[in-house]
Image (cartoon, rainbow, N blue to C red; front, side, top):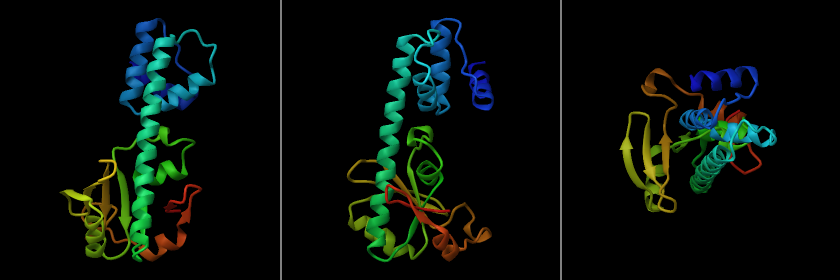
Length: 193
């Protein structure tokens, strides 16, 4: 039921009003599980006199918000650092999924939780992987469209993609078009249009 109440809040805009502290805690747990802790914390911040939400629950949401913000900021920083590293070698990349959306479509990176940083490589695969290995990135799990690499500085995961999807042969990309339509964000990360 907490998930449904949060869904109604997202669709309709009216903040759910917990009946008791236990209800508020249940809504906070559901928000964290759904990746909405940052958004709910922000909504409660602009409604500071809402006494239906206990201070302890607000503190839990605030801590979750900070954790997601910190993690997301580190992942965006990782994406930008790898983009610069490979760019210095003439290898172009663009963020995918969370890194692309968090940079361009959300008020805060905390509103778009991410597990890793995804970068689409538009140029040669082998030199890019070699450059990352030379920079002490450790290869992890490989798929037909991507390779996970562990960042030596932060231990975060970078997923380097040579295709946006599995079965890359079935879904060819207009790599030049993607690059031509891309733009720089204020943070210096080049993102797809």
